[in-house]
Every structure is written in C-alpha cells, then in structure tokens.
Length: 372
Image (cartoon, rainbow, N blue to C red; front, side, top):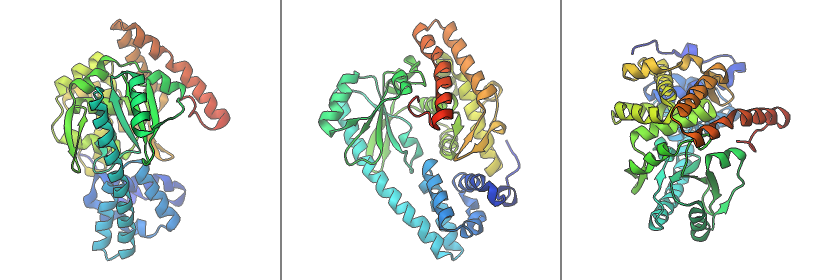
C-alpha cells in the first residue's frame, strides 16, 4: 500500500504542540532511520530540558537504541559532535542496563526450568536490540511454587497487587540488583485473566531466541501478535512507537502464519482486535515510510478501524474508549459467551464496573494505579 510520506513541515508544529513534535521525531527516527537528517535541525534547537524530555520519551517507547543510533549517525555526518555525543552517552548507559537485565533474565529462566516450571519470556525481547522496562514471564506453574522459588533463590520481594493484577493472575517482584521489576503471569493471560487456552499456546508453541549470547524461550510469532493485541487493544488502549516497529519487523520477516493466527484469535474471541491492531500498525507505518504492511485481505476487512482514530495525548498514541474500545470488548464478550466459556465470561463481566471505579479514582485522586 503506497501513501503520502509526512514531510518535516507537516511534522514540526509550534511550541504549544511540543509533545506531538516529540512523538513525530521519535516515530521518524525509529520507523524510518534513513530520514534521520530531517530532524537534526529540530533537535539542535532544543535546550537541555527539551533534549532530556525527548530522551525520556525514547525510554517510555522502548526505542532508545533504535531511535538514538540513527540520530547520532546523522549528527556525525552533519558535523554536530555535541548531539552525537549526547546520543552515544544515552546509548552506552542503556546498553549497560540491558546487559545487566539479560544476565538476571537468563538465570531466572534457567532456575524456573530446573524447578519444573516451563517459562516463556513475553514482550520483553520483542523490543530487541532495545529492552522493556519490566521482565515479563508466562508460566503455567503453581503460584506458590513460583513465589517460593523467587524468594528463596533470588531474595525477591513480592510487590503489592492491584485488583487488576489479581484478576489477571499476575504477580510482580523486586529482585535485588535488578533495576527492572519482574512480572510473572501465571496460568492466565488477558486483562481479566480470561484466556487459559490461549495462554497454554505460549508454552506449547514457544521457540528459542538467541540474544547477546543467551538463549531464551519466547512465544511463536502468532502468540507474539496475540500478546501485543491483548496489551494494546484490550488493556491500555494506546500505542507506543515500539508497538509499531516491533510488529512491522515481525510481519516483514514473513514468520507469521495467518491461518494459524486467525484460528487462535477466533478461538480466543479476539480476531477483531488482532486485525485492527495490525491495520493500525500498517496505517501508522505508512505515514513515515510511504508504504504500509502487506496484510491479507481478510485481516484488512476484519479491522474495525485504523490509525485515523489515533490521537496524541501525553506520551502516547490513544484510540477512543467510546465507541472503539467498547466495540472490541463487546465482540470479545459475545464470542466468549457463544463459546460457552462460563469462567471467562464471568471474568470479562467484571471489567466495566472496575473501569468505572478506576475512572472515579482517577478523577478524585489523579491516579487509577490501585485498580489496574
């Protein structure tokens, strides 16, 4: 699909639109690094506060290396040593953080397997050569076994759980020496922990991935799409630049079996979400590269909306809860009811009242973290 590439003139807006400018700069650097020279003059005009804000955004979007490497290279070619040094300093710091996390991740995964707890690293390594802010694992093992293993072997501290964490069957740990939190999804996936059969695929179809000298078990390509869809379309309702880039890289590798993808998504009641997720990725990518992804016709026709519904708010790219988010939820709920999955239906039915409580908490206290 061919489209119009966004020019630098369209991208950079007046100072009041600075957050949008940062998102555009980040998108251009990460999604189309060959165009990095177009943002050099803009970056050079930022003061130290502005540069640090943009750097913080690269971290929030998990594209520190993939955005700053082309920026540094473009700065070097332009003879702007200060910008090149700024980028390289941030890159070196991030690589140190990643290397430390990989050491912990390898040992933790090995201990899980030795203890008879099969495990898959979900989402965290999808950002490679970048890295996530958490170490995310999925295991079907017993909760008490997992907790005992982490506290005994790694002196991990179990972090407080929100209502959403309990519903999703997720536990978070703080491990001494590890800057990231460790999140373990046990036996279930999804905002309400509604997916058991789908979650089992993350173990039964996992594949080895070699990263910086370490070998990890990660979900198959189709499950990687499911994980991103569940997180973006059914939980957070916003996109990061890494979601676009990670998915584009996966699709362009031609590793995804679309027949398998649809079969698994249909069974989990999330095909509409999967199709919409992929079309949004393709649409957004097209704005910066001039061409989207080569997606099958049934993916495109099954999407409920595209990137035209995205809007910048704060650090991320959101789509509306009403009607878009609600439409995805009601379709999933209807599919789950028709499938006769009573436990999953009961769990999904808890989301609207919890969302209302979270909205109230946000309005009163400015945060819904204790809910989700």
